[in-house]
Length: 341
Ligand SMILES: [Zn+2]
Image 1 (cartoon, rainbow, N blue to C red):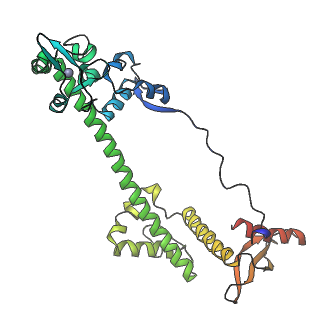
Image 2 (image 1 turned 45 degrees about the horizontal axis):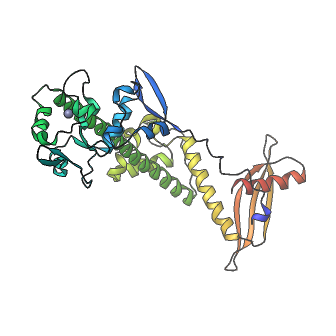
Image 3 (image 1 turned 45 degrees about the vertical axis):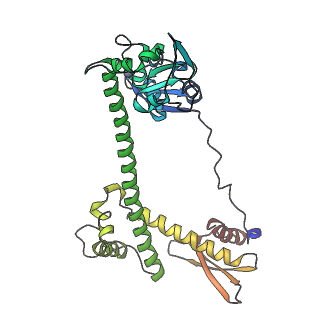
C-alpha cells in the first residue's frame, strides 16, 4: 500500500534542544537557574570536603539542602577507622556511634566527626563549631561531647534539628500532595475521556447522529451523545463522579470540538485497520461526485480490494470538495487516502 501513498513530512518532531539547567526554587520572588552539573560536582558525601551552606548563593541554598537531605547523613560504617594514642591507650572512632546518633557523620578523609543537622541549618555565629565546621576528633571524650553538643532546648543543635525535620516534612508533604493531586486529576480525566470515547464508538457503530437541537441543561432532548452520557453516569457511580456537573466546566470532554476529535481518532484507527488489511495487494478507487445548490462539488472516495480471505470489499474513505479538472479530482482522492494514514 505504501508505494501508492506519498507520505507527509516526518511525523517525528525534531528533538528539542537539551537545556542543562533546572529550576531550583524561588527567593525574593526571583526564580534562579543554575547549571546542574556544576552543583552536582559540589555535592559530596564526605562532610569535611563539603562547601559550607552559607557560601552558596541565598537563592540556591534550599536546593543544596534538599539534595543533602535526599542523600542523608554520611555514615561509612564499614570504614576502617584509624586509631590515635591518648595517654597509654589507642582510641578510634566507633562505627556503632553512627547507628546510635542520627545526626552523626564521619569524614573518612579527616578522621573527624560532624553533625549533619548543624551543617545544614546550624547557626555559624553561635554554638559549638567543632561538629558543624572543623570536625571533632577527641575520641576519648566522644560520648560526653556528643551529649554536650546536643545540649538543652534552645541549643544550636536543637534548633538545627527542628529546622531539619521541618524542612524534610515540608518537602515530603508538598511532594506527596502534588503527586496525589496529579494522580487524582489524571484518573478522573482518564475516566471522563474513556466514557466520551465509548459513547462516540457506540453511536458510530450504530450509525446514529451525535447532536440534538437543544443542548441546554433543561432540554429533554440534548442529542444522542449527551443523552447516552447522562444515562451512563446515572448507572455507573464511578462515571457519575467525574462527568457533567462533577467535572470542571472547561474540562468536560463533551464539546463539539472534542466530539469531532474523537470521531477523527476513530476514523483514523479504522483507516489504519483497512490499510493494514490491504497490505501490498492491489486496490482500486471508486469515485462519485455530486453538486449541491451552492454549486460546490463533492466527491465520495471508496477503496475497493480483495482481502486475504478472498472477499471483495469496498470501504468508504471520505468525502472531499473537488476542483473541476479531472487530474485534480484524482489527486484529491489520493489526498483523502493520504490524510487518513
Ligand atoms: Zn548538631
